[in-house]
Amino acid sequence: MALVSPYYYSAALAVRPFDMDGDIMATYRKVNKIFSSKPTLEGAGVHLKRAFGNAEVPLFDPFLMLDDFRSDDPSHYIEGFPWHPHRGIETITYVLQGDVEHGDSMGNKGIITSGDVQWMTAGSGIIHQEMPQGDPRGVMQGFQLWANLPASEKMMDPRYRDVRSSQIPVARLENGCEARVICGRFGDTEGPVRDIVTDPEYLDISVPVHTTFEHPTKPGHTLLAYVISGSASFGEPQGFTAKNEDLVLFEDGDTVMVTATDEPVRFLLLSGEPIGEPIAWYGPIVMNTQDELRRAFEEYDKGTFIKHRAV
Figure 1 (cartoon, rainbow, N blue to C red):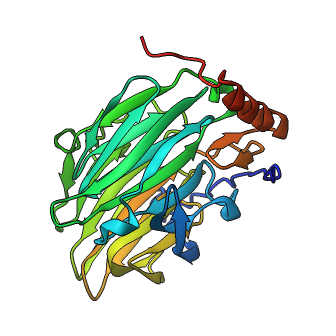
Figure 2: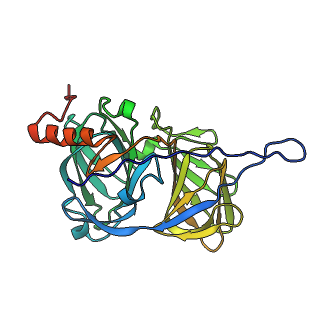
Figure 3: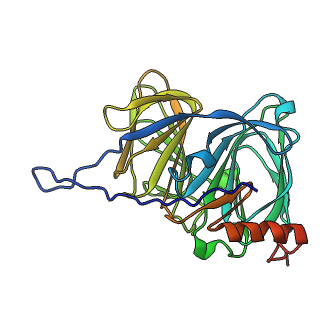
């Protein structure tokens, strides 16, 4: 078994300058790097685009992976992700269009559909399946994000949150920008997913053409944007252009700026507090040491993997 070597991350503190009147000035986040998502085959034969993953550890700490499974060809997704285990992470599935049927070892089952979110904390261990179904026209659009858990929480009881589209508030700015607030806060609007250990923010942002979007961010937190339509300039006033299926990783700061110069843009804006711990990662299980990783797979083989049964 090839195991990922341990990694470490240390976040730099942002320096906040003052203007002539003594007021704190915004420190705009610059672009660290832009990544182009890459075609990948996962599950039982699902064709998807991977924005980042194992190879980019620890750049995105506390996030581990972001997959884009948008397609209008059912043969590219219908085989889905049959029963498989997870431990030590959270998986967050956001569906833009189509249906995803799911079930897990805790007894949860159902269908998440257009606009819904499934936020699953695997913790000590869960076995589940996710089977994309698409819509009546065969269109399937969605994303799955993996978020790491710190060592102190890796063996917590699993939990599952099924968030319906109607539960996700939409905040609107005077300049026409909109944000679906899944987790975290946008102005006075708070998302329905709360009490997550890495203090994440998950926003679905739409910016009209010829419009600049600004949003305060927590210094020291990792911040990234994944473009899902259009293009825009990302970063401080002298930003870099990113387009559909590009991922932008930002440097530190307390404000993010995005300008839609030539066309409207829509993107996922994600942030979280870095964990800064070693990572041992193989397949669907992410632990801190190779011994913990081996033990997880041994327990799965022996049938002792699940520590928390459905009531």
